[in-house]
Image (cartoon, rainbow, N blue to C red; front, side, top):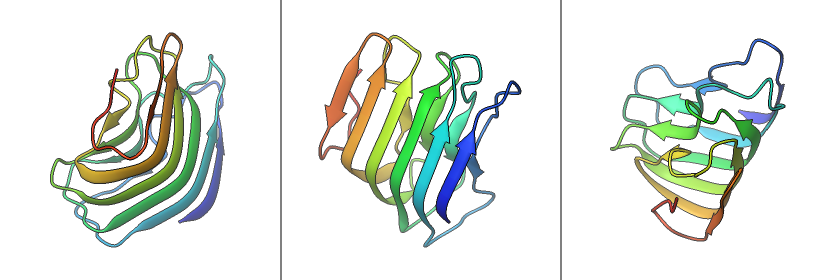
Length: 128
């Protein structure tokens, strides 16, 4: 998938990309999710409860994400791949719930929140 542009509406979408079943060797290159405080995304932006291997997720910017229910990335703990050049902003006071990283490797990834800003480069853990 390349160069997706999603704009929020009053309906508050739950998820932008939901992988059904195990999906390997996918690339998401370019995803801009632009919302307002009233139309923030409610669920994980990119989501899979199954194992996905060799993923490449890069050039993703999503703002803002719901303060209580939202996550930027939510993957099965055995999922593998690379996340690069990702920017996310949450309305929550911390950023700890923005990513359930699985076993993905993160590079040049920045997260911000209403009361906290954090940067990780490179790291496999999220500070909150």
